[in-house]
Length: 212
Image (tube, rainbow, N blue to C red):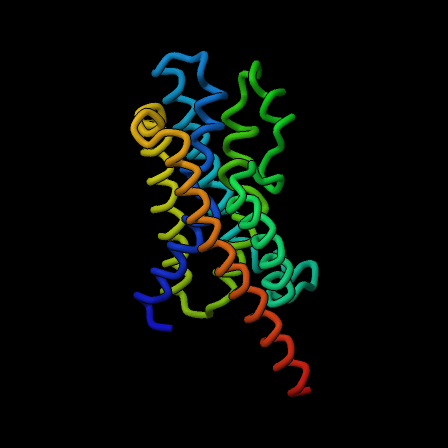
């Protein structure tokens, strides 16, 4: 895969699993009692923390896999199954239980640290995002392509920040139904990505075993 194709693949993969549009309704409900200034402060802090978490696992993920003796292909298969489950929730317009439950949303209404939980973690950077960035980093040995994964994370969360800063306007113009349509489309792309993860992982494991 050439560098431009890998950058495109990485950016689509990270953006689809983060899927900031699907989190807009939750973000608005959690910040509905706040002023615009307070809401924007929450958005900036949450997106910054989520980006730092994603970058941390992208940089240290392979080291963690080595520490626990886990092969990246095993994570690719397990992550693909997880992502497919998330994709099904998205295609049926459900709040993914991989990210946050309805009870957690309601219990967070009156907390002052909602920018940490549930917005930054796990709404923006949940297990699916962490798995995706680790797999992407582990899928190449070229430093230039690893830097493209980092760039994809930065671009994705820059877009997240813009979307969350203008979340009320976006919701006003797109509406709830528009967000549901977008979420379903992202769910379809995520399902395809999940299948690619699983099939690539299984083939790599099979190839490694057959060569022994």
